[in-house]
Structures are given as C-alpha cells and as structure tokens.
Image 1 (cartoon, rainbow, N blue to C red):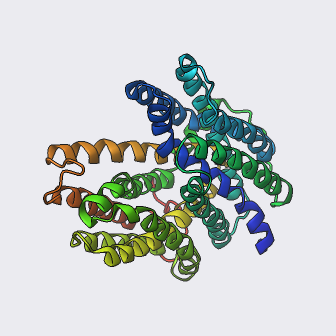
Image 2 (image 1 turned 30 degrees about the horizontal axis):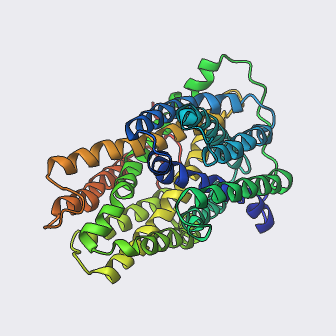
Length: 426
C-alpha cells in the first residue's frame, strides 16, 4: 500500500483513544469502587480480579488466532466494541442489591476483558497489515500510540471533571466512555484504510498458535520486549509511593503523570524520524539509554525536588515514546519475514504480544512489592525510604540494560534497522 495520508492515519489511530481509556478505570478505580464504595470484601474483590485477569491473559493467543480466520478484521473489531462498551457501563452501574455484586463483578469483568482483548488484538493486527514498507509501519504504529496516550491522559483527568473518583463520577465516566468508543469505532471502521484480507485458514488452530514461536526473530524480539516491559512496569507500579514518600509531593501526582504521558506523545514523532535516519533497532536502543539516564538521575532525588522530578518525568516520558512506537513496528517486520505459505497470521503474533504485555505488569508487581517489603519499606511511615528509591529507580535500569544488551546481540539487521533473522539457523 502507498504512503498513508494524515486523514487515513488519523482515522486508523482514532480508535486507540477510547480503547486506552478503558485500562485505567479497570486497573486503578475498580478495586476501590467495589471494595470501598460498595463495601465488598477486599479479599473477594482481589480474588475475582486475579482469576478474571489470568483468564483474560490466557485467552489472548486464542483470540488472535481466531481473528486470523476472519476475512476482514474489521468484523472482529466491530463485534468486540459492543462487548467493551456494555461491559464498562455495567461495571460502574451495579445493581442495588449487595448480594448480587460479586456475581455482577465477575460476569461483567469477563465481558469487558473479552471485548477489550478482542478489539485490541485485531486492531493492532490491522495496523500491521496496512503497509509492507518498514518506515510506513512506524508511522502507522506511531499514529495509534499518540491517540493511545491522549486516551490515557483523558481517562486520568475525566473523572475529576465528572464528579470525582467516586461512584457518581465513575458512572458518568463509563457513559462518556461508551459514547466515545462507539463514535470513534464507527469512524475508524468506516474511514480508515482497510486491512488486507488474510488467506482462508485451513490449518489446525494449534499450528496457527505455534507459528510465532517457529519464527526465530520473534523469539528474540519477545525476549527484548519482555525485559523492557518489566523495566517500564516497575516504576508504574511504584510511582505514587515514590512521589509521596521520596519527593513529598503526593498532591502533585496527577501533574507528574500528565507531564509523563504528554512527553511520551510529543516524543513519538521524534522517534519516527530517528527510526528512519538510523534504523528502528538503533532508535530503540537510544530510547532505552535515555530511560536509564532518567532513572539514575531520579535515584539522587529527595524530598522537595519537585522541579527535578518533573524534568525526569518529561525525559522518561520521551523515552516511553520509543517503547510505544518502535517495538510493534519491528514486530510487523518480523511477521513479514516469518510468513509461511502466504499466511502472516498477525493476530496470532499480537495475541502472544498482548499476553506478554499483561504478564509484564504481573511480574513487575510480583517482584517489586515483595522486595520492598523484605527491605523494610512501609508506605507513609516517614524516615529515609531509600529502599523505595532503590527499587523504583535502579531495579528498572537493570532490566532495561539487560533488554538493551539482548537487542544489541539479537539477529536484527543493524544497518537498516529492519527486524529479521539473519541467514543462519534460528
């Protein structure tokens, strides 16, 4: 396909805005809403969230493989959108009877996660199919991720303007979300360039699911992506603790997060340009280096260093732009190189990709929180919380440097920045 114009890029990227808006309420607000506002047992809320999230992650590869069997991915997206909209509306409009809340939460989480995952995977695979040009793929990915970051910022700010982060504000937010999702999906489905129709799938589902792992370059890239993702997820898990107990500016947490995400969105065009000039691999390495530099600087901060931390948020947000724009574009290159019998099976690849994305969040929490506890950190207890600074600042650097080393050693073409296995056994 020829180079997409800005209207086509915008029409494709637009759907990323409401899809991204769904994540923050599900991960941040939902536990407090059911465990605090509705009075459910926190342990029961935790168990239901854990079980449904595990089920959600496990089904991602299956959803991706099934989307490869639909001749037009827009059908899969169109079917997923009503599930996501109705699921979000239902979660924040529970029945009045407290005895129904547990079953309501479990059932609506299944519906919401199913809609979110099916829409996300098919939407990402759609983008990978829009061009065979390595640089155009980066533009397409970047367009989607800019709208994604705008959606995250909007989701963080909207509840406050709709009545606060309470039952009333979240209920209004869910209505606004559903309206935006339907409108944006309608524009994307009607106006965005159509994805190429996949070849009819005659092979067994198990073979479709195994294709990504038969691709040597994908195995390398997945390892790099997992290490880099854990490095990003650890600070995300601990950022509110760090702002409160190290910087001493809990009242400015929202401002810091806005700076971070806006810097990520503003930096994406720079990484697109860098990828064209020096290659995707080298541009991603530069983003990793910038991230490490920012967090090493953060290690030196203490109470009252508000301006310095704001600058660190801007720098680490700029590095985030590289993590968002470049890996999915490289993945699209890897998929093309791993094509078998004319079938790329992008959905199967992105199903695994999304599974790893969700696993990174779980691994980060499973590593960082027990380490903090073992080192004696207690939130809000005062004193010298250097253990928190150690885990928040320096542990991510270890994972990010390991990711960079793996990327440097991987069989990814160094000169052009095009991801593919070199001509040697995988």
